[in-house]
Length: 195
Image (cartoon, rainbow, N blue to C red; front, side, top):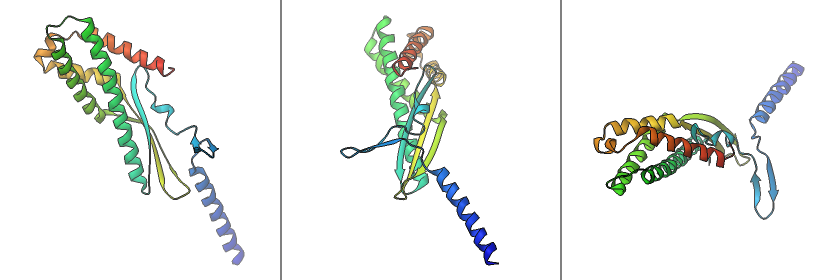
C-alpha cells in the first residue's frame, strides 16, 4: 500500500515538474552587472514587425494578475499600432498633398489627417492577434506578450468609406494616386525593417 502511494506521488511529482518546466519562458538572456539581465529574444517580437501588407505591433506587460498582464500588453500594442498607422498615413498625406494641386492644401491636409486618425482608431476593432504568450517570473508575477496586426487593405477601405461620406474631401481625392503613394510608403517601411 505504501509502495503504491509512493509511486503515485512520485509520478504525480514528475508530471507537475514537466508541466512547470514547459511553462517556463524560453527567453535568451545575458547578464551584465551594470545593466542587469538583458532580454535578447522576446516572445512575439518577430510577429510584431510590419511589412508591406500589414501594420503590426508587439508589446509586453507585467502584473501580479495574469489577465491584467495580458490586458496591459494588448493595450500597449494597440497604442503602438495606432501610432504607427497615424505616422504612416501622415507621411502618405504629406506626399499626396505635395504631388497634387489644391486650392487650400493646408485645409485639405488637416481634414484628411483627422479622417485618417479616425480610421486608425476605428480599425483597431479589426485587429488580429498574431501571437500571444505568457510566462511566470521567479517573483510570482506574470508577464504577457502579444503581437497584433491589421491589414493595409482595412486602412485603405476605411479611408475610402469615410471619404464617400465627405463630399468636400471627395472632390480633391484621387483614389488611385493615394493608394499608389500608400503602397510606396508601406514598401519603404518594410524595407527599413528588413522585409
